View 1: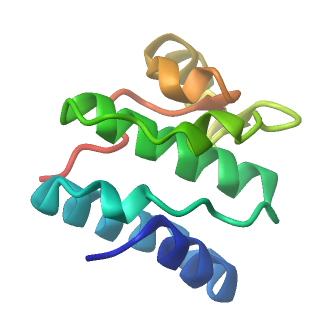
View 2: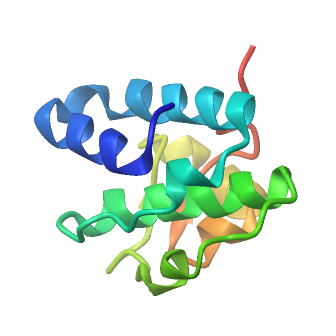
Length: 117
């Protein structure tokens, strides 16, 4: 089982592949449906990644009807809006489609951000 802490460690060691590590976590969490993967708080070191990880965990807990760990609510929003796709022409779509758990932390993603084929 992959934990949020593991995702954070992997992403800090290899920042260019953070999306791979995050999506591996998403697949694993959806398969195992275990709160143990998000039970331990992450150490705050990167405001954008911290916010993204917390938002992802909350979104998945909501999706799977699992109780959201209290520590996730303590993770602050990004200091400035982050459009994860990084493409100017997708900003308006991301503003409209971004799920609430992400928007709360000023993270803007397309509605299919956590979808897998």
